[in-house]
Amino acid sequence: MSINMSYDGPEDLPTTIPVFPLDGALLLPRGEMPLNVFEPRYVQMIDDALRGDRLIGMVQPEGAAGGDASRPGLYGCGCVGRLTAFGESGDGRYLVTLTGVARYRIAEELEVDTPYRQCRVDFEPFRSDFEPGEGEDDVDRDSVVRTLRNFAKAHELTVDWRGIDGASNEALVNALSMMSPFGAREKQALLEAADLKSRAEVLIAIAEIELARREGDSAGLQ
Image 1 (tube, one colour):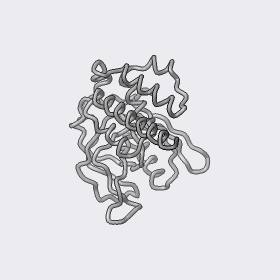
Image 2 (cartoon, rainbow, N blue to C red; image 1 turned 90 degrees about the vertical axis):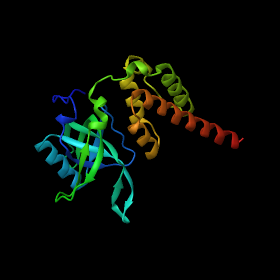
Image 3 (cartoon, helix red, strand yellow; image 1 turned 135 degrees about the horizontal axis):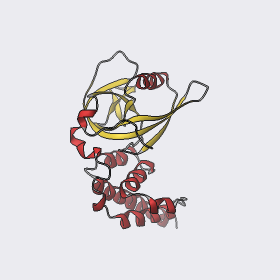
Image 4 (cartoon, rainbow, N blue to C red; image 1 turned 90 degrees about the horizontal axis):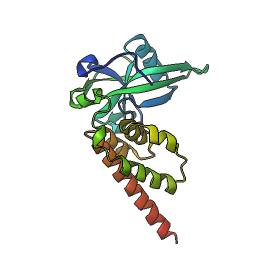
């Protein structure tokens, strides 16, 4: 999905953003994340974002802060996205799509009056995120696709291979990372990979570990 606004570098983004903690949610630059928003605090966050710059930072929660499960700690790295699609359900929910712009490091969480959380963030460590297709030529596409085929076969997954064949290396690696059924730590490792080549390698490694574990479990049942 295209973005009307042009973001050419960290200087084009605000230093303070609202954050949406969501376990297992992985947003990557130029990736698309559909969200079903129903909690009142996040409904207000969407309202405020639509009145402003339409930017929301996705981040995974990491444990509980001071034992307060309603306000868990946050991983130090997330990805900001722009609201590129919006719909109302008629029952108070919003159905929206975030398109990833760039990753960020959390510098500090701010004391705010809004019901949702806000952080001061730094995009500078991820300047390469603003360059579409950066590092595509370094990706071992054959290994990515081969691992995907093995994983899909083991898990009996239906895959649109025609769509896979037509996807760029960036779109392929990032889409597979975002839709992967892995846990929070694995998703975070994919998010924080230094570059596209590293993310592809992490994706392959995690998938191969999962396949080996699955094969071991199957052998143990025989």
